[in-house]
Amino acid sequence: MAIVSMKALLETGVHFGHRTRRWNPKMKPYIFTERNGIHILDLQQTIVLIEDAYNAIRDTVAAGGDVLFVGTKRQAQETVAREASRASQPYVNDRWLGGTLTNWRTIRQRINYLRELETRRDAGEFDLLKKTERLRIEREIEKLNLRLGGIRDLRDLPALMFVIDVSHEETAIREANTLKIPVIGVVDTNSDPDAIDYVIPSNDDAIRAIKLIVGKMADAALEGLASRKETLDVEVTDFNRYRYESFDGMEDAEDELLLGASTLAKLRESTSAAASEEDAADLDEEVAEVISEVEEKIRDEESE
Figure 1 (cartoon, rainbow, N blue to C red):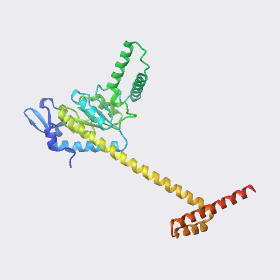
Figure 2: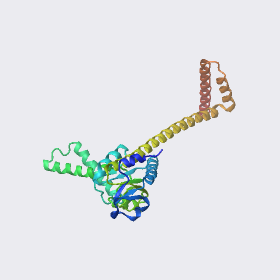
Figure 3: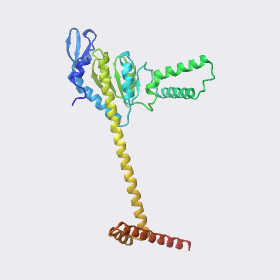
Figure 4: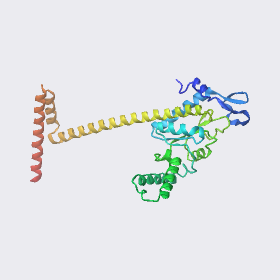
């Protein structure tokens, strides 16, 4: 079953490109036809390419990577913030700060500075300052949150970037290309797809079209998170089982060292042949007593 239906794409206007005079010839392979001076995108290709992008995001998140959602144009800002937050992924929906990726160390320092200001404010350290100074600090916190709030929990560079309107986000894409970070891009008929690793041919201006595609990419991230959690749960279970079996094996080895293989085998046979839990308990006590006697004998020999 397709990630998104043809009906949903048509209803949200994904197929509408720009006027023919504004087209980029590199988008010709993705154009189906022209109607009333407007290019119409080939939705059959869009369906397949959305699925490719969906799988890339799902697999990236499942492997432990982060996907950076980028949409700073007015039509995309609210949707990008909401859907990225829903999927627990970082996002940029205000102006892209030059060096966000290529100068990540400095950006990380600014994020730490934001956290420090918020901590000091919440602790009441600024309460005794003049009103004008407090307002200045509050405005600085608001500005930093506006620019960096979406990436404040990003600990390292993202493994993948998802962009709305590749023409509008040229700087972000250039930085990702420099660092070899794969890019998924919503590409309209007026844009250049060359710098994009996963092209999604689509209307990048209609709010409904943006909501549909960004929502599907967020769903992919959520599926990846669920897969990651399942994998971690299995690994923890396997580790606990290994730890228990290893500990059990160490106990057996210690018993054999103290009693000898033949004596231990006889005691085990007696235990397995016990007719009741009470008999088994008695045999366990017997084993413990024998081990205790042997240990005491060893200590006596060492003291001599």
